[in-house]
Length: 358
Length: 136
Image (cartoon, chains in turn purple, green):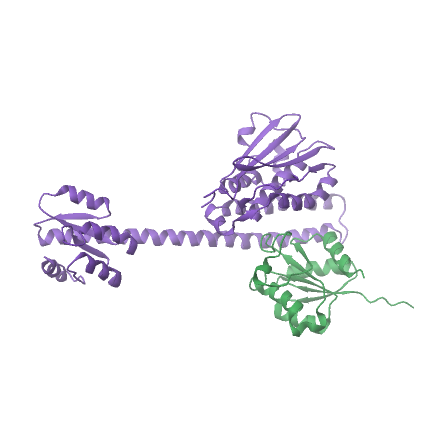
C-alpha cells in the first residue's frame, strides 16, 4: 500500500517519504516537516488515531488524509473530527488519491496565507499607529510652538484683534492635538498589549501621587480635593500603572472641570469581597438622565452648537477610560443627580484572584 | 562697574523650527543661547561651550540618543568637567518621555535628567523651570 501510493504520487512530481508504522511516521513528520500526511487508520501498535492526536503538537496545519477500510464511515468521521481533511476508503483509484491530496494541499496553502496576512496586518496596524503618531503630531506641535512664542509677545506684541484671533487659532490647534493623542490612545488600548505590563499595584500610592499632582489645578479652579487614603491596607490590583493612571487622571480632571464654584471632589478607595472599588464624586451640575447611557460613547460631549465646536477636549476621554478598565476585566459606572453632582465608580479585580487577567 | 555674565543655555534638537522658537524664548529672558543639531554636535558643544543648562530633545535620530547623552554626561569620564550641568528633557511624544511619574531609562540602568518638559513648550513654564535650576 505504501509503495503503490508512493508510486502514484511520484508520478505527479511530489516528494514522497513512507513509514511503516505510526511511531516511525511521527518521527519522520518531526524530522522532515511534510506538507501532507496520508495515514492508514488501521495499524497495529500506534493507530492512525494516535497519529492524528500527536500531529497538532508538531504542526497544526499539516494536511491529513486518512485511509479507511471498506464501509467504515464512522471512523472516517471520527478522524475528521480529529483534524483530518478528508478520507479515502479502500479500494481507491490513483485519480481519487491525487484529487483529494490536491484539495488538502490547497486548503493548507490558504490557511498559511491567511495566517501570514493576519501577522502582516498586525504589523501594519502598529506601524500605522506609530506613523500617525509621529508624522501627524510633529508638524502640529511645531505650529503650536510658534503660536506659544508669538502669543507670549516674544516676537513682537500682538494686540487686540490680532491677539484674539491668534489665540483662537491656537485653541483649535490644541483641540486637534488632543484629538490625535486621544484617538491614538484609544487605538492602543488592547488587552493583548497590556499583558506584558501588568504588575500588582497599591492604588493608595497611585492616588497619593495623582492627588498631589492635581492639587495645584484644583486649587486654581477653587475646588477642594478630598482624598483620605484609607488607613488599612487595600488589596492590590493587577494592572498597568500608566493606563490606570490615565483613567483616574481623566476622572479627576473631569470632576474638577465640571464642578460648581468652590465645589468638592471626593475620592474613595475601598476593598470589597471580590474587587477593589474607586469612587470619584463631584458636586457639579450633574448629568441629565437622558444623557447617562451615552456618557462613555466616543465623541459624546454634553453641550450644544458653537460651544461644542470650540471644545478643547476630544470627547474620547471616557471611552478610553472605559476601554482601559474593561481591558483590566473591571467595570466603570456612572450615577448622577442633576444639580447635585456625579459619581464615577471603577471596580477592578484583585490581583490575588486567580486568572484575573490570564 | 558691574558686569553680570549672562547664563548660557544649550538647546539640542534636530528640528530647526524648535531651535528657533527656543532661541527666541531664551533670548527674551536675557540668556545666551547655543544650539546643536544632534547628539554628536551636542557633545562637542557641551565640552567647548560649558553651558549652564542643557535642553535635550529625546527623540532625535533614535530613541535613546537623548537618553544616552544624558547618561554619558552623568556617568562617563569624557564629561567629568560638566557632570553637574542641569539637564531638562524635551519630549514631543507624550508617552515616550516617561510620565512625570517615572523615568523610562531607569529600566536600562540609565541616569535621568533633572526635569522634563513636553512640546509645545509654554514660554513662562520653561523660563520658570530654568530659573529654578540657575538660582544659586
